[in-house]
Every structure is written in structure tokens, then in C-alpha cells.
Image 1 (cartoon, rainbow, N blue to C red):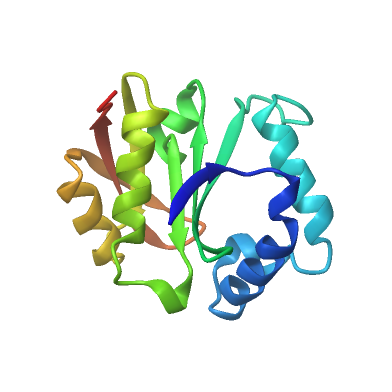
Image 2 (image 1 turned 45 degrees about the vertical axis):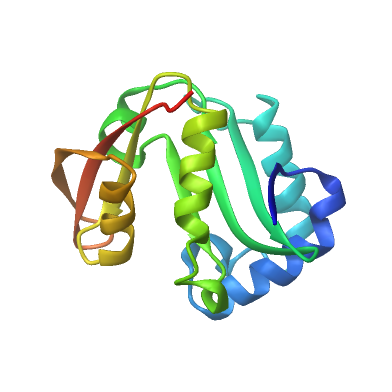
Length: 165
């Protein structure tokens, strides 16, 4: 098992991962299957600060890999703005549905806090996502409050995490 920054050598593994995540209904992956190569290349460009939408900072993607299979992905937004501070947060992650409950998300989050985050980071999750809430709190997340997301019709919890760097 290892965690590594995404690069083009992961393209085929990413397709398998994205298909399984899409089948589970993860919104991020529902539209990526048909154009997975374009999507993946765009994500790699984002890490280099290229082709970013307006007001977006660079975003790096890291994979949790075991036996050449991606079991989890974590994204880190480098820099900050009002949207990151108050809505999306600096960190987003998911675990392959068939690999959940094995500590993968905890390992990825703590790896990022140790190796990538230099100071502090905001992270958010739905109040209905009990597993993410527990994971964030277990990783030292300090509860900052919540906001109501009209698009998803749900309460979003905000936490602050400290670097372990």
C-alpha cells in the first residue's frame, strides 16, 4: 500500500476506480466515464495551475494504491479563497465503495496532513455522512459550524484541521 500523487501512469486504474464510484452514485464520477482521459488530464493540469476555472487555486490529487488498484482518492486545494474557507474546504476525498471500513480514508487524510498541508486546512462534510464526520473528528478536526446547502438540501459541517508537518 502506498499513497502517491496522480500522474498519467494511473489512467487505466483510474477508469476502473471511477466506474465503481459512479456505479455507487458518487456525483464527482457520474459524468467522467465517457471522457475519463480528458477528465483525468484536466485534473493533472489543475495540479500544475493550468486550465483552472476562475478563482480556483491549484488542486492536487493523490491516490491510495494497493496491488496496483486505486482504493481511494484525496484532493487538496492549495491556497484559499472565500469559497474554500466557507463552502468547499481545502480537502476532499472518497474511498472505493468496496474498500470502505478499512481505514483508507483515515490513512489518506493523515498522510495529507503530514506530507502536504503546511499549516491548517478547512474540510467539510454533510451532517448525514456520519463516517466522514467521525473520521474528521478522529483526525483532530475542530468544529467551526455549519451552513445549509440549497443545491443539495442538506446541512454541511465545517471543520479545521492542523498540519502534522
